[in-house]
Structure formats: C-alpha cells, structure tokens
Length: 278
Ligand code: ATR
Image (cartoon, rainbow, N blue to C red; front, side):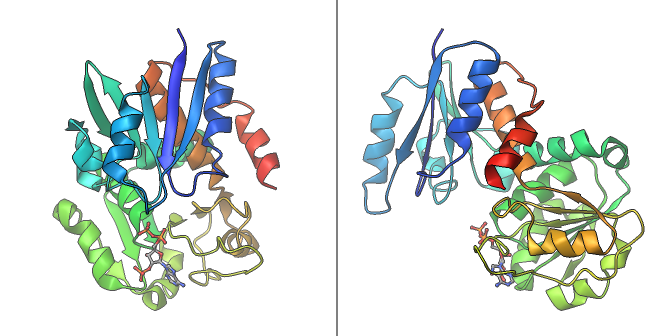
C-alpha cells in the first residue's frame, strides 16, 4: 500500500515534517508521499480544504496558523484535541475526518525517552514558561497523565489563568515572569513553551535561570537554534537539558502511528535531525 500524507499551513516551505515522515516510511520499507500544501491567508480556506480532502490522503498534519481554524471542517475531534482546542493531525477513518493533537503527547514521550525515572513520578514540580498554543497542549497532557504540580508563568497572567480553567482541581499556580524568576529553584522540571529564543542571531531568553534546584531538568521547545540562550544558561547553572527537536520527532511518530497503525522507532533520527539543525 502507498501512504499518501501531507501538511497544511503557512509557511510550510522549510518544514522538517516531510523529512521526518519520509524517513519513517523508508524505515518500515513502505512507499508513499508527504506533500506540503501551502495555504496563504489570502486563499479561500474552505475551498482549499475541500480540494485537499479529495486527494485520497490517509491524513495530514496541520501547522500554524490553522490548528484552530481546521476544526469546523472535521467530522470528529478526539477528546484531548477538544480539550486543547487545537488540532495538529487529521486522519481519514471510516469515511470521517478525525482531528487529533499529538503535540503534548509527543512532548511527554520525548521526555520519557530521555528521563524515564523523572516521568514515573507524578509528584514532580513542573513550571511551564509561556502560555501560547504549545503550553496549552503540554499542560493538558501533563494534567491528563496525572501530574499534580504544574504551574505556569507568563507575561500576560490572564492567558495563563485561562489555560488552567479546565483542570481546576489541579490548583495550578500562575505567576508573572518576574515572580517566576524568583522561584525557579522550586522546580524539578522547567519547560520554555513560547517562541521567544527563535529569532536568529538574537540571544533572547524569557526568564533568568541562575537559581536552579539540584538535579533540575530544563527543556525548551524551540529547536531553531537547537541550543537556545535559555538552554545555555540552564546548562551553565548545572541543569540537565532537553532539546526541542525531540518533541518534533515524537509528535510526528504519534501522528504516523495514528495514520498507519505503526510505531516507528526514533533511533538515530534524533542525532540526524540535531546535525541538520546545528
Ligand atoms: P501561540 O502559540 O499562541 O501562537 P507563540 O508566539 O508561540 O504563540 O507563543 C506565545 C507565548 O509567547 C505567549 O505566552 C506570549 O506571552 P503573552 O501571553 O504575554 O503574549 C509569549 N511571548 C512572546 N513574545 C514574548 C516576549 N518578548 N516576552 C515574553 N513573552 C513573550
């Protein structure tokens, strides 16, 4: 069988997803394609989606800026994607277009691979920095996986509060960035979830990390550059660091599994992708 997969978004020209999914297909020796469908904001979105649906795809990924906009065009939404309010993977199942969100789960899987002992302990204290779409996905996935101490720090406090509403029992504390910088030493795991740090040549970091708990792990979902200013200062402060490109690999692994029923091992793709990005 030939797999026919794809990606919608804007821009998608430099997306790494074709490389990842084509590597998965090669690894399990199946034929197929992964097509980029660039949809500029000036295009008629519903017409483009209607045409893409006619292409005979098993599924497609959805990236910026369409993760919310795609929802009314789907027949069914998986519960976690519904909770997050965003879809990054669409699968054609028994005549229905079904929406999933693999970002948060992919992220947790990537952490589990590197730090299995840490992820077995749902009592660890976690700080999410930033409160955009990525934070929403990661927060709900931690909450659903039973983690009990997940706090959020953001420049705009209301956005962080809004994310916590669906999990009121968790008693998540929300902080400004300034407040969070004063208490970074309370956390076992600190995750930078915003796009700050992504601008080439600008060493921008969202909070200072000079005080860290012994044995802390610091993670950044930004993967370009691979070693952000945030991760550099974490390393200097003695933390173990977790790179953003692994989230990209594992969210793709889970999407591929939804489409094909096959979980392809990441193996050396982690190292290969890191080299591509360095
Ligand atoms: P989204 O995922 O919502 O599309 P994003 O750009 O990936 O957007 O991430 C937005 C997050 O980055 C928000 O938490 C935003 O803070 P606000 O909620 O206060 O806007 C944060 N962010 C972006 N630029 C920032 C900056 N210069 N300093 C601090 N936080 C910033």
